Length: 95
Image (cartoon, rainbow, N blue to C red):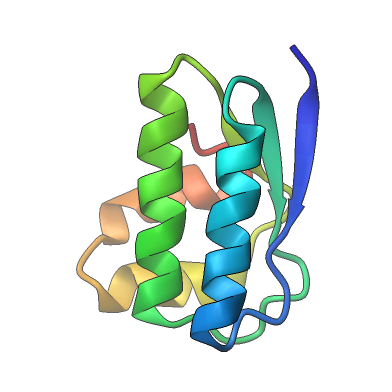
């Protein structure tokens, strides 16, 4: 079982989100690492996609991790009332 790298930079349109969703679908069955290092601003929609992918990977017995602590992600989690998840995502190993 390999580790697939998924780049989450430049997610600013519906087409970008669809690409990201396709990347997650292609990585199913393996562990995946999402690179959040270039994410400067995060929408609630992007947060929903990340949380859904995280849930999907976990349900399949796979790991979805994050390369870096993304302040944009942490701020969006707090804004969404999901501050309890900040610690998991801040470590870069949310699964």
